[in-house]
Image (cartoon, rainbow, N blue to C red):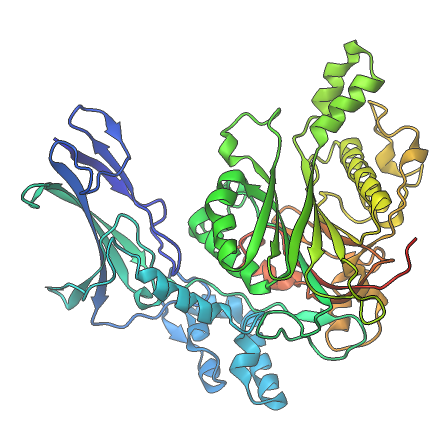
Length: 600
């Protein structure tokens, strides 16, 4: 007979909006063991599995700590209550928790006071998301929508079972998975799994149950704002479509989202396991990405299965078309579904797809060794050069006009490169060679079409390194220390390490522009020697800039930039990733305008 051997949850801390999928191990009648589902539509020898989820509501109201959401609150900040700060931010689990968090917590009080002084709408100013539709609002909205699918049929009147000790059980789902809603916050969930006889619908054998810890709300980070760099002295607010109202501009996001295979508790032991789990991170990342409402989205470290099963269909719902290039797998030996790659999305109402180019650095390496090296040296060379990195180049056509009345009807094309360069710090020659190879490919495209270009991605190269110098300056100093190690001679002669694209880093605009609200604060978050952000990657062991958005300065101008984060605010959670930010990198976003220009 069918029997259940084991039931458990990968994470026992449930979060609003994040699907819970119990692990159910079965023994079939033929004695084989499986985790496959056995629904009532496909019984095995007259038996199937029935699932139920309950919300256990106690008569006693429970508040959750704002800093440690898995802990019950024991004290409340009355200053928050007086300042009308959302009540959830006011709870703490212990006096130590409150004192440790005070330097960050007091900022809420200061901002609430200044918001009241400025415009009297403190809650919208303080806790409104990056876009007007808002994370908090959309979260509860999506959670409510999700609850309708927590079972094979639409929600029915909750089955109530009274229990002793002042507890009431509300039935909330009848499928194997369940997505907690805002109604579940602070309550324990109970999962039941039992074998049922198909003919009589009578349970047989033991009822397997799991109790979760209390459901916690999904943390929502403070909003990141667009800061104009074109001399306008007001903070940029997005319109209802998520863009600044000028039709001639467009926004580009670049974000390394941290592939699930790399998000291990060994690497990121400071991040709570529930916040490191993929079911949580994917929802938090999606909420963040959609919240930015960028016209073009360049993502790195997107696993191929996550692209197909999650990001492509979910972003499609928000109006995006996706293109994907998986890393090659000459080196990678694991499951090919979990190989990561680069994904580029664009809003279908703003752009159409013209052409796609795929760059495989392994192929370029093979071509170089075939033409430059004797057979005896090829294997050693390819072992060094084969790193599976790729780039995805997409040519788009704008569906909006930048040209004005003087040049009507001209097609506005845009070339967007998205890449993730090799990570190994001891392979500086390989990094530089990959970047040079990409730039040579982009030069060929530029020679065939007069086209603005964007080069986005995680270059695994800090400001001042040779790859950064090549991108930003168009050349590398022959005495640059990164050129010292070149065992294969792939960088020789050094005079070939040049390109003609007029590339400029978007975030250096913060340093070049005049005065304005927010600009001084952002300048303090730049490295004054390189005019790049102080960091785009922040872990316990490393902090620095690895990610960039470069643009061709003869055809594009920067209108505004997404504000940078300060290190102190991230260090309250030790580093990234954290419950608020689900990658070890931060997202970069720039708003551009195409410049009308004469043909070269």
